[in-house]
Image (cartoon, rainbow, N blue to C red; front, top):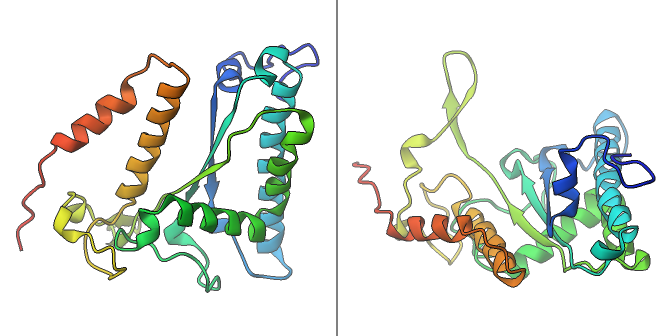
Length: 227
């Protein structure tokens, strides 16, 4: 466990993390598999167990702390490596800023819940069971991350399509049309920052980092990429 029975953390650096109002968990989607047996399935089960243990630690700590048990915890799950999901997962979400679910938090939530139900069932059960330990949880939020690659370096390492990273409004297509450009999850990143800003405002947090970042994004000018 991360702390002793008396609530003293084995690593003092963890204290601020466990006392925070928001807990952000990064989830590696590349470990998801449709295999019914074998090493990949075992790896997925192990990953699920470790994530469930971490979530349980937060819930248990707050349930044993009278002051924290009355405060709302905001669990956030950032599903990373969406671009590296197993090709055998035929119902995986289509990545790219042109797909509507990037701009619809309800649909994104449904996608996240479905992925947890299929590939991380133990972790999902821990989240659901938090209420039985009298811990006040806000509805969990899901955000997604991906980076599309366009080749390999001379050393054989995949490289990002950096020449297309500049943001351009004219590249958005809410109809779901695939296009070249915005090869990283910019929309989701901004949604994530916006959500942090909302929590800061609701919890009277004095931090203005989220607001400053968003203001800077609004002022940013598109880069002329040429033809």
